[in-house]
Image (tube, rainbow, N blue to C red; front, side, top):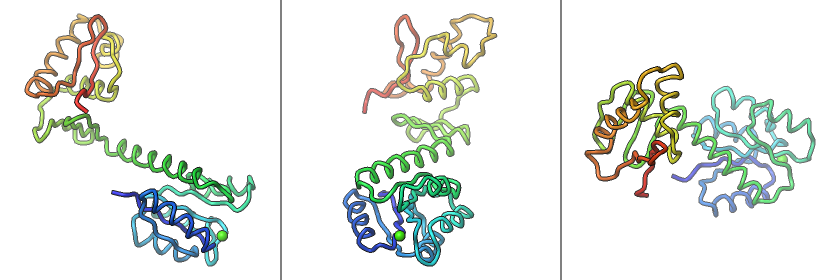
Length: 229
Ligand code: CA
């Protein structure tokens, strides 16, 4: 789904230019020409990002942002008319996530929008605690592990080990890394416990499936990686 962006800008020509550029990039765009209409739109609809001019009729951008923060944490890029430092500081104080100074190159605006949307989506994923690789899904909030449609029954240690591997996707982890992270530095038992648990984990997570995710790196340790992309 295309990200939906609200543009609040009273200069009709500039608003039109931004609208065309964002539309061209594949975003859904809604334009409002004063602070009051902008705020109303934000109350009624969900947006993924707001581009908010500071100098606006009715309610100025700072005030829109301040009121917006009472009910929404949608990412906001403030547009300042001049390169005035106090403006920027105030914008960030009001809860803006970023600011851009007029006149700006459209490429810079697009880069800032992309960065902010990326942050938003990553943030959401962290909040929901969903880890995904290939058809393996871990929902940390529910302590749930699935491959495809099937729920997997893991012990606490197997679960911790799997989460550690998935969170370090593509990174080769030594037995010592795994041991100290999952069993703790003060673990005094056999180091082959890692290999034993990797075997348990594989029997549940990999053996019944075509696409094996846990790989052995000879002489080093293990890595979780999806080779079928
Ligand atoms: Ca303006």
